[in-house]
Image (cartoon, rainbow, N blue to C red; front, side):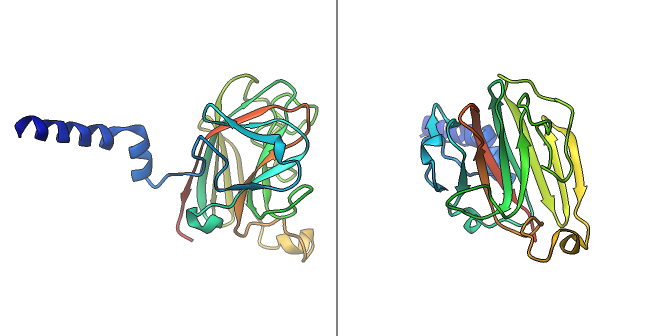
Length: 214
């Protein structure tokens, strides 16, 4: 009985202090099971996305993989998001937020956070694409890094390995600037990973979200 009690306590301690358990306790939830694309949906060129060794591998024709799972009914307004990413030389990709599923073409709704360390596009990793662009190359190809996005109210913070590279506040009159029918505004929606072109190879893992109070 005593031995069983010790084992039970030990198991509890292991669970309580494991990184995964600690992450859940802090409100972080995984969007990717590491084994399949369950909870994700892609329209045309679905072969661009595959799963191997706990990673989403992005390599193929232009395509976008949207989170459509049960977490928060795949609709996020205020949140913290992070993913571990690795790019191969010349690769281009992106992480969309406040977007929605599209069968084809570039997502019309939401913002894109750039993933690009050496592609010919000068907008580098961490850019809030076309809104607040990063020219500096903070990350090298062939190495894992963490890309973090926080949206709270009208404010967007983007970090690369804990370094803030973008701190943007959307103006109140953004609709009048971009057109009343513009969908490129802070609102609510899901996340999407971008397959940019057949020459780009990008890896994603440990894709996590922490919903915040609206």
